[in-house]
Image (cartoon, rainbow, N blue to C red):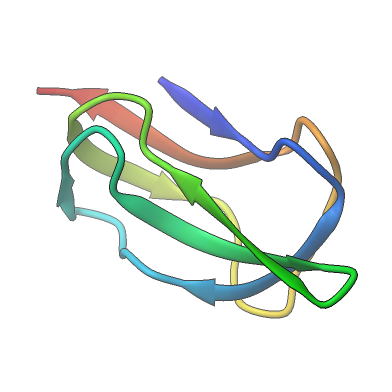
Length: 71
């Protein structure tokens, strides 16, 4: 399942790496927009098979941040 950004922002911090096992609600990355930190969370439990962003990347609304294989 693709996890997408809900807004245009800069990736401030990548919290998990590819291969990590995550639960629904776990933070994947933290975005920064207008001096606010906005977490992007896993919408399902599973294994992170792809991390498509890195720190300081500029992303747009709808960009895929990560891909999770359901548990």
